[in-house]
Length: 152
Figure 1: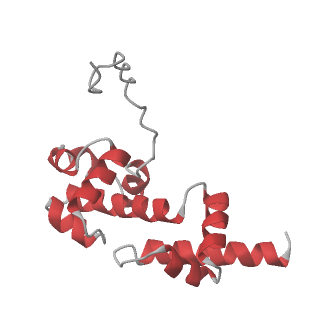
Figure 2 (figure 1 turned 180 degrees about the vertical axis):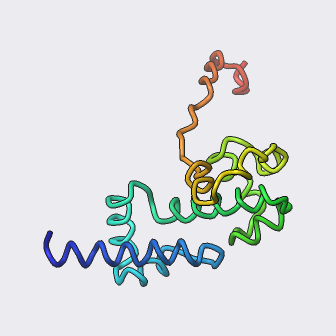
């Protein structure tokens, strides 16, 4: 590994540590790139190559992970949304549902008793959000020619 490659990895790790520590702050790619001592475009490319997801996706996954812990403790969805650094309840709920597979309210209402006897470090790994691709709905059949076009 060359000294330049090592410096790049150190910078990426510094930015990732910033996201892990400061997830509740408003962070954007330029701020993360500054922590890595890179331009935003170069940082985004290198981060994705190193970690397999974009910086923003990584940050949102960390926020969702923290939100799951707060919801298990009984926090309201709105308070959880604000506590993890999201400013839009709708965007938070959509992203939470995309990542976890349930709405925040459904997740909060679930019985989490089985996790109480497990050490926190194990719960963190076991409940870590994993991004999955949602398959698209079946395509809508094409309309017949002239239908809905105003043609007579």
